[in-house]
Image (cartoon, rainbow over all chains, first blue to last red; front, side, top):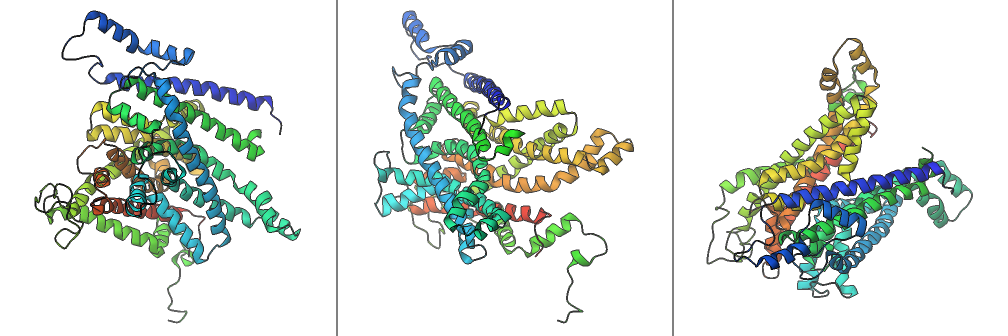
Length: 306
Length: 294
């Protein structure tokens, strides 16, 4: 596949627009944070002017200073609640954990969703299809915080087969990943089934069958490639909401990821940390949206021509 | 019943064409899943808004019956303070359902108006208005909603603003797409030729034609608003101390000794969301002219 210059230019425009969006996000979050009454260093007894000045030098900043620091030096300032740690250090520890959780969940969702979608398309009109689709509907309806708590109750507290919380070995990662991915498995199953059904009756599948190609090859080379686009289109919004999902899953299973730090920082008015998490999440979000667009054109070259 | 007296399908035999609404109703009436879901939702609504009047007060503490398992006296048991969980689940539903319906109404109104204006007038305005939607779309809104509610207090108006701000975006996009297609239709051209003003055309001709799509989207928005409210409550950003999200969070703390405290509100919320999703799905199928009439 060749990259024409028009397409590269469009990606460039998108990147510039993303930086602009990021500035808006920082501005809005900053405004909300600053709008609340109270300052971080107001205490009952007044510290000496020297101490106060030292504190302000280390912790205080204006909008202009903050924006400049972020964009030019990647400086996210010091956290208020974690003593002597920069926001970047905290995020550096938490981000890999959240990413691991999110990636496992997404991979599980894609793999399981495509498999179930394919199965339900092949068994169309049989009880098996209705069974899968009913399960998918339930999967979409169950909120992840209900599912997570119920799984924890059943497997950790009653059956005692998994640890209650933490993020250490395979057994402790199983429940959080399943909890996070279930909704997306359900959505992908529905989307994939619809797309597979649409393509199964097309002429090129009949031609492939008439040529005597093995079924597995038809599936892999012909059907999957042509019906995957709706699933890819769904991936960008799915990834965005998986990020939100990590908030609650990390809280339920006590996982030391970004989501848990975010909730903590909001409740403790740790302004720089909350802002830092929002910015990192937003960068991810914007980048993933761009990636999804590029991926679409790889799968369907027609989009690139427009 | 012989062929002569058998009821003939209205749609194929009537000399005048049936209206889209009546076709949709006909399809819905045959959809057992939709009827069942509607029935459950009606019962749930009645129970939630009338039920607490017949039960003991949801705040009343029975001190010798803390964490009592479900029984005839307390259908869903009691919580750690000896309050009746059934009464609390019903009471919590009031807020959830009200927020779901009102939040959806607000977002649909804003979204429809925005989409109509964006799609109907000139291209430059359309481009500018849709760019704004694109940018708002890429905000990590759940994070902003969380800091918004925490900073401006846990009151119901902040919650409405926060949830409403998010939901109208999709409505605006859908409506705008519809309006763009409608704009080229001949009846709009005819109305213009007769000298009808733009505002009146939007009100009398465009909006009635996008209503079907908007209604379908709205039925699917209600459960999503309810879910978001519960999500925020679960995280501790609750506007009332008795909502489904709060009950689930409390239930999670006591689930080892009192599973009913988690299971009762959790299952109620799930059943509610499930039925709303079923209903929205069926409505979408029913209003889709390409789906077959069985």
